[in-house]
Image (cartoon, rainbow, N blue to C red; front, top):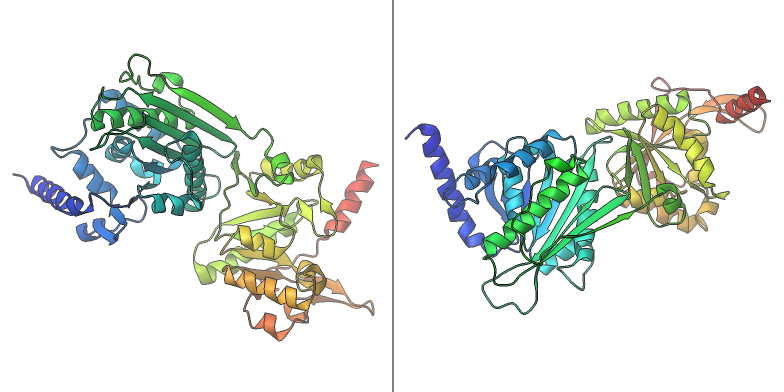
Length: 467
């Protein structure tokens, strides 16, 4: 036996030995990114309720004598999915397990799979969805799982990435007589579009493995459709017989900006031609503003903030953030929002829209993020009148700090009551010691960034040119 074969045999044997006591785990997690080299770290249990398998170990299992057979058309479809730029997170319970194995067995899985979880216990599913559900095997639960997977995909991927959330929940044959129907529900979510697929299987016609194969092929086709692969790339689910047929439903948010203004969604992101709806990405650097208009000062301020934060945090991503609501002026009209968004689309700059005019509100959506803003905005940020008083301000800003957020302030030329102009930084703002002690604020040095561009002056100039 060749050394590689002996290693593979030992790996499979070790995996099966570990998997036996995990047969009834409550939840399984298969992370694909950031794998360690040693076999011990590639295959281990981390919690009583979680089994973690590396991509290589899953491949070893898939090639063992107990592996599920993969037809050539399945392998070709998986290859086409891996060749597509979309990245996905998978949440599956009750079935669809072969699809996860197929995806991880065909080379190129790391281009597609960001994360895969199997929340088998009710408590594990509650943890993912953030709420209980009345019917675990249903279209609504599959849709909720797909949306939760989509939000997780946004957290794990960079701005501009095409992402898909996949949810699968099934009630299949088990080791006891089941009174209810055997059925499978799969859903995909791509931001503004949710597609669901459901099928009721004839009881007693198949064993558990065959029923899972039906759900797994349905899952692959659903993923391929979400990745916008051509129809002829899909596999024929010839396992369906008689009266069995797949029911499809599609729901779409036709106008994400209108949905945001109505409060139906929390965020709308524009990046690299993608529209990412209701999937906030925390842990980034956000240049917040009204961008009326977008100018070089905004670009320079974000670049300086990224430089300042990278010195402390390593590589971080930057993005622009604009609230469609203003603490003093209320909501913007939809057409005005679209007008301000267009320059970002034209320049392929990432922009996130929120309905969070106050920074504590932004922090509740964008956890662990750094917000970069100018001196004038920083002055307003520590005005008690926006918080209902001094104590309310302290409470809200402490909440920002508790959510892991930080504020970086860029200085600018300001004129005092005597008409004297000077370069002002956050150190020139009078703030209570309790706020200073939070460590929430820091300044961008003048040597790193200074821009005397005024948005007000630019608007006046543009108005004069249009006369």
